[in-house]
Structures are given as C-alpha cells and as structure tokens.
Length: 299
Image (cartoon, rainbow, N blue to C red; front, side, top):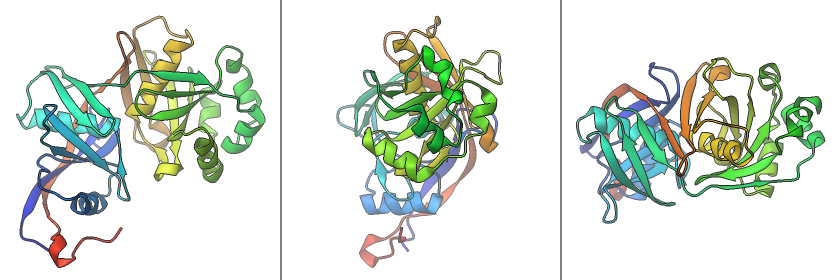
C-alpha cells in the first residue's frame, strides 16, 4: 500500500443523533483518485454509499458515489452527508451551492444550522399496472393491505433523479409485517426500470410526519435501506401528483424497523428538494491504494 493517506469520515444522514439515520462514507478531497481507488476505498469503508468530493468545471464541486460493489449515479443521503461534513469543517458556508453529478448539475442549499437541501430533477410520476395479488406475494401480506388506500392512490413509478416503485399500504402494523421476497422484488423493479420498491403508510409514529416508509432495493445491492433521500423525493412527487397533501413540505419517517430511525423533509413547491441534518460519527485517515503495485482491494 502507498504511504499516502486521505481524510475520511462516516456521517449519519437524516438524523441529529449518532448511530441513527443512514451512514455514508465521505472523502472530502478525492481529486486525483482513479475509479479503482475510489471503488477500493468504498469497499473498505463498507457504507452503503461513499461520496467522493472532487473539483468541477461546471459547478462548485462534483460528487461521485460508490457502493462497496459499484458506482451509482446519485445518492441522496450521501449528498446530505458530504455537504454537512464540509459545512462542519468550515469548507462550505451556509447558502446556495451547485453540484455536478452523473445525472446533471443540481442545486444545494445549506441552512445556518447545517441542514442540507438537495434539488431533485424534474418529477416523473406515472401509475403502473401491478396486481395486488402479486404485491401480496412479493411482500408477504394479504391483498387487503393495499385495497383500502388503493381506492385513492395507485401503484406508481416515481422519480426525481432515481426511479422507484411507490406502493401505498393501509396501516403501520402491516408495513411492519412485510417479509420481502427480495428476488421477486428485484425482478419486478427490473420490469419497470426502477431502483427499488418503496412501501409507505400514512399511519406514522410522529404526529408531524406525513408517511412512514420502507425501501427494498436488492437490484442495487441493498436488501433494505435505513433512510433514503432519493426515494423520499420520489414519494413527495408522487403525493404531490395525486393530490394527497395540502402542505408544501412532506415529512418521511424511515429506518425504525431497522433501529436506524431517520426523518427526511421534502419540499414540493417550485420543484422537489430533499432535506435533512447529519451527524459525523467517525473521522480518520485511510491509506490510498497504489494501483501501480496492484494492491487494490478485491471487491
């Protein structure tokens, strides 16, 4: 291994408490790293996604995102984590910033208290024809779990940068009873070109919350994600599209069934913005793999 090292952090996004929310790796100075080096570092850190901060010609900065196995185009919680960490370090000030990603240039807002808001792409929401019988089999529920709420809300594919299948469920208890068939979920998502399946209910733990959700994305290597910014943005666009909200802000609960509770704010006025707080739980240095010596960690 090379003697060169880089500052790295693990940051819990969508929470104000350590060891809650969704952890992301953050590498604040990733200029000069090759794809193989970023992939190896992400595998070593082991978070679901690691954000690598790089300079950009067309924006204030660029982020690239790697799971332990592959690069992904966009990650909401890692974006929140990276900007919260840079704000904490004094690298960024409160205000508006631009961010280059593989899906395009997005707007970032940082509030004086460190809350970070990520702009989504233009919403794309459309109903899809998936039978309750198939959903019941896939999620380990009965068809009655969907029938009531489904009178007003369809099953849909929704995206504000990353597409998800949105599935409304009647009650919190039923959402907790989900026993997913991950292989079947992956096949269903592949049929509809979706990254995962987000099941939600209006039956929430906190009075101020709008929905409680669970996200299953085995096709991208995540059996169940603790708290998902991009999926929260998608459900916010979905609720805005089908007229089930009166306010301009949606509050999404997620992660409680995994003992990683997180809360995501979604603004659905003049576009879709996903926002939240983040907490740094670990900082340190990591050795940079020397690709010339063939010491890349195998993944």
